[in-house]
Image (cartoon, rainbow, N blue to C red):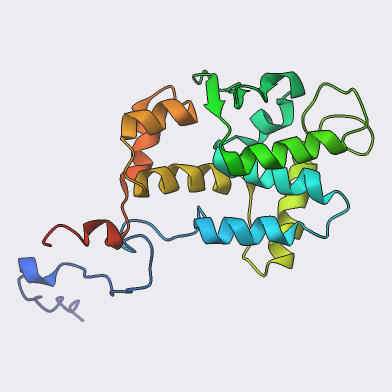
Length: 210
């Protein structure tokens, strides 16, 4: 029995290309990449509030805040030291890994108040900014646990530390900051890493024809 020949298919036109469904509530164009890798600023605030009832709320809330505000990698936050903070000048030295560019970051008023309150409550002379109950720097596992428990309390999806670094990048870009400035702020050795944040939300185009 002869093999059946496949039925001819109609020619594909340019109008047959895939069209993603439109979701007006999506903060990022959904055809570019699903929103699973970062949090909105409102979600970050909920995450911080979710750490309010942890065993060490002042430390955990500041950790989450600084992961977001400075785009820390998990390992960078762990190694941060108290003497890298200058309260008089309101700056913090951010030491970058992965051949990144280290530099001073400003401590804005809301963050500076959190840092002052946290340091006043410390009754030790340990050099690290974030310390465990065993008087050691926090471990990566501890950081992930802190975020997981805060996310659960805030009724958010699973949150991992690098999501907060991405959240920082997207937040700065949506505020209109230059991609080169974001590169230096996040300490990216290459602009290629920063180009992820050129994905703009739909609201970025609102004013184009007004």
